[in-house]
Length: 554
Image (cartoon, rainbow, N blue to C red; front, side):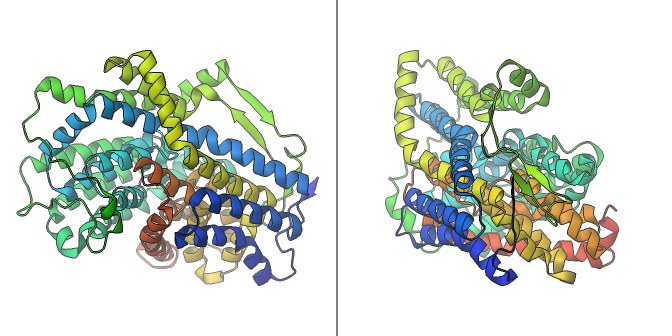
């Protein structure tokens, strides 16, 4: 057995700096734009191994095995989702269904700002609720680039929009993960998150349109933004507090989409915003293909159903695949759990991160049938057959998709290897403890701890599992509601989703803008920081200031 060490250098400051080296190096290399993302990820993984072995004293065999586990987990399930989403998108392009979808959306509105609201925010929130794990950014990014948006606008805006729904994503998986490590009822945790995020569900639609079109551009469509935000935020609060945390995103997103579409039947902006590029200097516009004007001929009912068919199939399949009963059934048919020898239950998580020495599991769960990516593949195959694709043509297209996504899949696997290694070596816990030592300011910095967790791991669920118990222990010691801070870990974490390297690679892959991950990171970074700080300030108000304290479940 090896026990994690959280202060190996005998100095909290020095140990924290050492723990930050891999992730800081990764972000700097990507942001520089001079190092390709897959090279940056591999170099950062090497650095993470050096830090884990030589500073945090993790046995070299354990460090290498943890890295290998992360590489495999990077492909299954994350890379597997991306590959099959891009496959579906390419099929819709090849069959002409995507052009019909363009016309259908153009029939709702030609205004680019409103298209972003409909697709990046509301449509993306549905896929976050149904499947999560990179699916919404992959789909909305591909749809926006297909509609003629610049690569930076399509990728960056998809990342910003995919924040407010994340805490309830994949049918409430982050809440369930948080409940599993804190011991709190998931219904109570979901209700508390539902008293934090609705404010930001109202803010984010305004924010994403401001990022795209500026203040004046945003004010030109503020009624539609308000309808979108309110029709998402109110159901998000009601469902999370009075029904359950599992269907929050699905219910809120469907209501939001419906409300926006109905509103646009009676209201349109005075001036249409037709530019598909970000305001100001959008360097990605130089790489754009000429935007083909959308055919304004109204779709027949048959054409409309034909355009929506693949996405209807995806929605149905994702709802089935996200259902707990289906997962249980699928896993009973095919499950292969591989405990990594020399690693599984051979590492103890130690106090104060855990209440007592707790063995860390290291199992690769190859539940192939229940993987979200498998559901996406099934949806793509069904859609392909319904759209007239032959099996031979479908196999050939899948081969082209693999070649297209190969470098991105390598990058994603390396990113997950870094996250797995930092978790098992205790490096990320060292960073977490630095946030926990902030005393009266802990509600603010504890929220940023959730942000850091998602930035490191790429998953709100993983961040909750990683830091949930630390949030409970620290808040109880400080006399702050542990339910408040456990929920804040998830609510703060959603703003880290847009800058985690895994999501950025998914966005660049979906928009076919390889090699520009640094540009995407530079665009979204400050949006992520500012929004995370706003969540932290709101949690501070809930912790200390009346009447916000009345919102807290104790």
